[in-house]
Image (cartoon, rainbow, N blue to C red):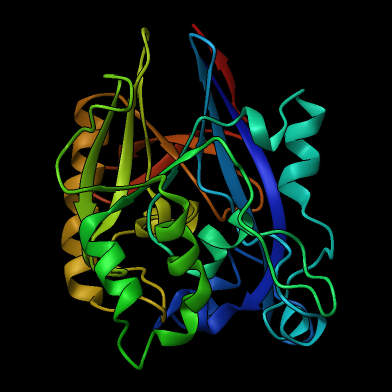
Length: 285
């Protein structure tokens, strides 16, 4: 089994939005902001390879936005970076057998779509992949609240349904995925977000998605302005961090520009800390 971190497109988003009610005087010690108060973020995906199967965790934001929206949402590159980086690993879109999506916000699922071309509608990429989405997250995407409606891609749900390859998950595992992949669910960021646990022969790791998007958010009280239910998220985060420590697991980060994975520890005051940080992941065992 092999797991590799693969970068998709980068973004620059407002630091205040990313850190919620944390004062800038504090969060700027963790992440630098530009002249527009934006911080650097990545859309990091993870490729699992086992027994001839290529399983992708997320697809990032991709390049589906037209130029005006690309600028509005701070997407750095116009090309589909994930496809380029997969190709560098010798993997084509047609080689992907499954894609696991924590939720369907555009910065996690936009990479399912072809790059923007004027007068050309987007197409669904990855023609041989099954698409795994949590049942509750799917329902939220199909009937979003006015507050988060802009976070979804309306035509994507229709494309996924019409593909015949959509698989909705409401349990801790799925019969069409390997047994080393298990799921837990979180409602704090968005209802039904699916966290993926991977049991490798020598250790466990968990893709925490937007529950803990990067190392600064390991701090228990730190949430994003985008989180629907911050207090619930903090409770869910504590449960996850305690389990990560108990099982000596790795946290995999989707948006941290510097760190792809870390372990977690607690100091003498009980504060959670990201430790043993890795900028990239290329684990094989």
